[in-house]
Image 1 (tube, one colour):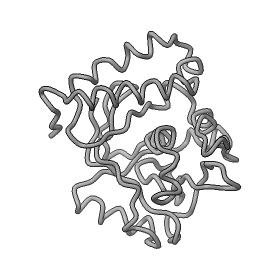
Image 2 (spheres, rainbow, N blue to C red):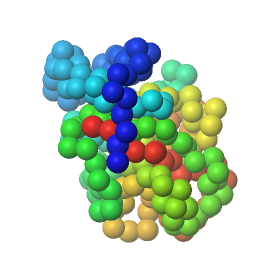
Image 3 (cartoon, rainbow, N blue to C red):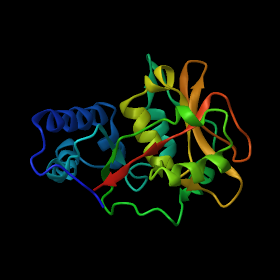
Image 4 (cartoon, one colour):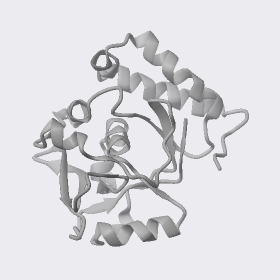
Length: 205
């Protein structure tokens, strides 16, 4: 059950506006073929549903192709990239057990990059996540997180997104390559000392 603040604190509203402007400054509305005003209007209803916990404003691939979204990320001036083909990225869809908001813009609350799952096989980490009452980030959400907090790739850890799969044994991840955020994939059966499994407490939209 989603629990949102009835009277969201002023600082949470300010934070929503800040994150909205970050996406606008990165050119997301232009890539989506909409005006900045239209994008702000799309986000505005979320003001009434802000959670008490920290949150991240994310968009779905229905607005901007995910490969292009990866290119909007940057870390200390170095632009994000991917070597995955657009058709391959599109194969990674949210898993059937996830319930996503209908709106193409929504919030993920209490996000964790999965430091406790470093060096754990993704296939083994998912049951732990579910047992803790948390939900794995989708590919869209992971990219949205890096757009808002690229510094977390350095300050916390790089991560994989178990909430989107392509019908094979791969999982997508975001890590730092030559100083830039990179979208790629790894095998679900292989652990990595530098990749955690990102999750959230819930989605609000």
